[in-house]
Length: 450
Image (cartoon, rainbow, N blue to C red):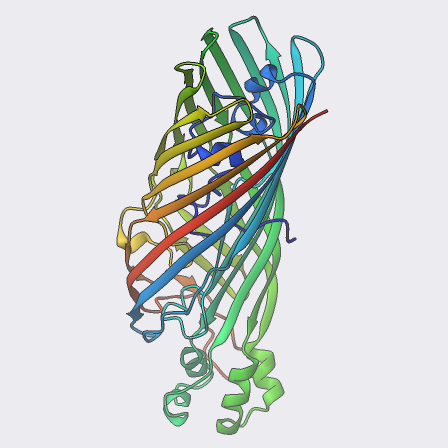
């Protein structure tokens, strides 16, 4: 599924970070503005402010950078190259006013994502080399205008998730399980094996919103999104064909016997519960040209304390995270230059759920970040407008000092005389160093009133 893949450097945890170019221009501070159909995501109560039928189509382009400098006790000191790519992420929204009281809407957007892929020389490759997390959310919503001051909204989310993890297995360790003398006989050099797991799932959640307008020029909003349970199921493999070929000259076993013993496939599973969030927002028009706005969002990242990857008889791996709950704060302003042009400016501080260097995932580096955003809206005619936005994301350098997590070791007993170590635990070493990241985000949005 190629719908979207976010850059791991974009937002804290594995949140994507922005679902609207109009919101991006104010660094996501405009949750109570409710000026276009993207309010389906920000606050469904805001739909009651939209007349007729309106749509917004959004494209975000993410240009991230992640660099690693460090070493591992067993993986050397390879930096892993440039592990992130330019990414294109679409979103879409539509609202329809049934009458003066009820408005319905539909959103299709990317709430979460992560993507990183290090080269084969990465020092931490035995812990993790590649991570992909892709999601999209289908969100039908209903907005209800209670009176001129109060509106509420509710929605249901059907969320699709696809996840993939790849890491290397130390060839010398696997060779020693075939025969303890093999690492020495091979001169201490053996090709890595590769473990991978890929799965997907659907989950269901819901969201609520409230909008209070005490005056014509002031609005306050509250929005909540629920957690969603995902039970990702798919396929896992251990590819050790190259290792089997390297061992073949040193054993009486044939290549086919070695390959059958070392390379495996299995059913895989990894359960993930996405975090709920609670947002408070405010919007105030100072005069006919200037407006100020703000947003404060709490996210329950503490739901993710570890990820358990089950792929027996190959392995069961426990990825410790120990994440904490986080806060995100945004402030922004807009200036209406004339009837057709509005410009926006915003700043956001986004807290990381990871504090200790020992809890950092090399394949999902994270730290506190700051957004600086600039945007503009151009009214093309009575029915069409365009929003554009640019954000630069400053991310604090992240130290990492992590021991590899415990996992049951691969069972390599079939066809070869080995000790069956599949029920034991092992530690594969320690990776330490520093990860430096930043990102640029470009957004464009077309709004159309039918």
